[in-house]
Image 1 (tube, helix red, strand yellow):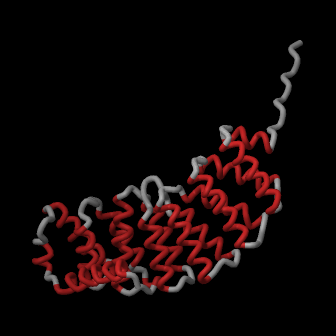
Image 2 (cartoon, rainbow, N blue to C red):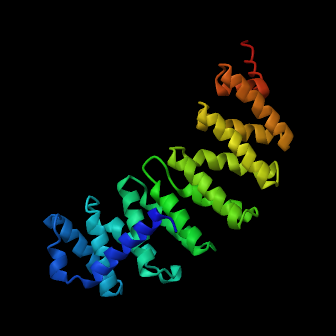
Image 3 (cartoon, rainbow, N blue to C red):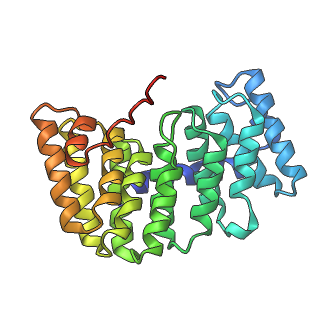
Length: 281
């Protein structure tokens, strides 16, 4: 475990211990929180208790919520809490609190509640080991925002597993994908590129090499949305790895010489001629 992760685990453990020891009266007087914020936190605790959550656990969730009191709506926080509290997820309390906190932070960055619930459900129900599950959720939730949904990455990693990418290779691929998201890349375009590759080559090594080429081009200035469109059209037209590589190289060569990507693609795949207008009688 890295020093950073160890500190994070200790921080959440401290929150949990503090919550267990705290009496309701002390909770209501939490320093630095407004009356309205404490009211919201107490409402969350009340709702969780009504949902048969043990009192100490409900208070723990309330304290995590109060530490992120700039989230002013109880409803979304309740929905996230209930998601991680689901018995079929079989999570320990410290993991429940950790994933709840990451989800709240993503919500305050503008991520959609539905996307966060989907991410939690898919990852927690998948057959990942505990270490991978935590790492994936930290990456997916930790980079979710108004501008970047984690859903494409969640689905991409699941698809990669269905295509035989498992164990260490899946973990390394997931972290590479998360790394791109951390740099500000929209995972939607990454998934669009990956989706066409299994039809071109079954070799994961070749798939990764192709994606590396694409994101090297992005790092040099190629617009990722347009590049994803280029890759999809090339893969549909040239369904072998050799041809796909060659044609992408041609498009990128034209682009870096100054031709916009859409026009460079038209050179490699000429658009159909315009239909002639019928003669006017």
